[in-house]
Image 1 (spheres, one colour):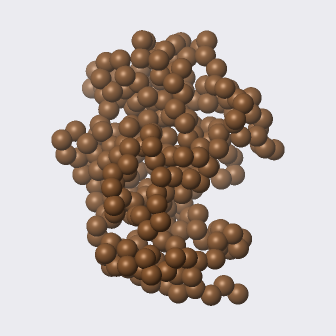
Image 2 (tube, one colour):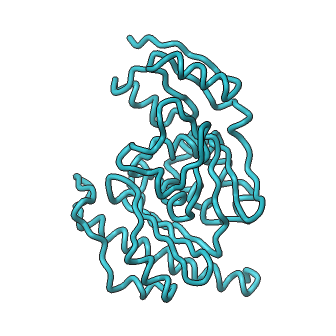
Length: 276
């Protein structure tokens, strides 16, 4: 039997006070990671602090060339948002392919980033788009936020409030989903910022999301799938299990990157022709 206290918080101030007073408390938004770990007895919090209804954690808006999404925004809300579809269509596409309908209707963008599951989709978008994770204490660049498997720069008592994405010139996401869970065995988010700046973030293949800088350099010179052809992802530290070897995941990462870049070309052509 698991004994814990449940508190539905109404403000970030209350959340801060509860976390300060209860060292073993955990935040609950969608619960897509926390609830399973509690069931497996891998987590036994003294308090569950429900933050899903806090107004300060909601909202989607574009201002001054940046898309801001509240941390408690559900995946399905990102996927269906007209604002997201117009500003960064690739982000809406990514959200629409997370897990399954149950996960998309409960999971939140802030929870996904805060947990930094190696197979999660959102970390690749945040890293590729050079997002800023705004917390209850500070602002953290995506390059500094993700620090390995289930590890981030978040400190004790720190809460993700919103995520700010610079709107890129163009972006695309492709992944090879696990056939059972729908999570990424390897996914690649490619974004172009300005004329020659390209960022490529790989998720699912390794113990954490990472930038493929060789591909970034090659694509910065020529944004075409052929630019990646002669490259390879270093398989040394990639994941390996019954579903695939390190080398298999390295190849998947390359293939997904090529597909994402090819999608960019198709999207650009459709845009020029008015979508016809």
